[in-house]
Image 1 (cartoon, rainbow, N blue to C red):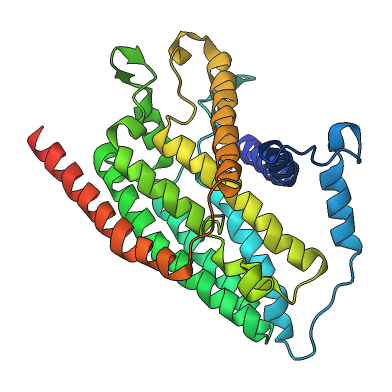
Image 2: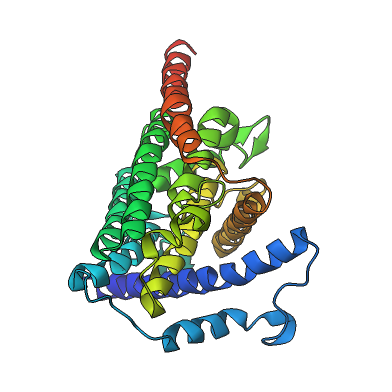
Amino acid sequence: MDWFFILEKAILIIILFSLTLFIAMYETYMERKVAAFLQDRVGPDRAGPFGILQPLADGGKMFFKEDFIPNSSEKWLFILGPGIAMFTALMTSAVIPWGTELHLFGRTISLQVADVNIGVLYIMGFVSIGVYGIMIGGWSSNNKYSLMGAIRASSQMISYELAMGLSLIAIVMMSGSLSLKDIAAQQSGSLMGIEGFHWNVFLQPLGFLIFLTCAFAETNRAPFDLPECESELIGGYHTEYTSMKLGFFLFAEYVNMFISSTLIATIYFGGYNFPGLHYLPGNWQALAGTAVLFLKILFFIFFYMWVRWTLPRFRYDQLMHLGWKVLIPLAVLNMLLTGAWMTWF
């Protein structure tokens, strides 16, 4: 057994886990600052310089709130719901390639926790399991409004998973692999004579738009935040939750936003690839590629927030109409066009 390999993976898992939680925590700060900027306000500015300690204050507030479980609820399922939501959100990052290989102490270190050859299926599988966390949380509360929110959330997420999966089939057809590492590596080629610019967004613009729209619906973000529409459902599926159980549901949304931004950057925008990467020596390729990937992720996180404070919320019938009658047919059409293009050209 290669203990050094196990140690490398353990260190990478700890770093990735800590970084994911840290980014999700400061997404709450970023969201408030972006909202304040777009609405000509100041935003949080009391807790620390420029309000940078606000996420820590929010976390402390969540920890010290009363942990209340309704008497009429299904106690164990009530506890399990937010745990499933958080677990599935964190597990999806395991198959994402964060950069090229590092060479340290005579060893080659892969910046990917698990290079499974079915990475796309792994992601879609864990995304689909996340529906159970929301459904169990809403049903176990024994509250009609929570159940309505859970039903709306599950039907929305299942509907948009179909179009999302179909949009990814076109990428799999072009790359010939279900591995995210292969999909990212193939985008290092040249486009219009520019090395490292062979990004899938230029080859699959329709697929990208479908995937992006579905990502908004999958993460329950505006304009598709129907499961927790306060004007209709009080708080939605987590109405009865308090303390860190509520925090897990809210935190899982921000983790999902980070992971979906990472997937968009990896699958459609070259991942760690950028023009000029191949000119860099050795480990600088890995470090620069990872830094560029995080810049792309940061842009898409900002885009999520920009859309939230720009577009009005859809009605529920409009949401389901868009998913079933517009996005799914477009995703099928995109798949057929991709197959025809590959056959003839």
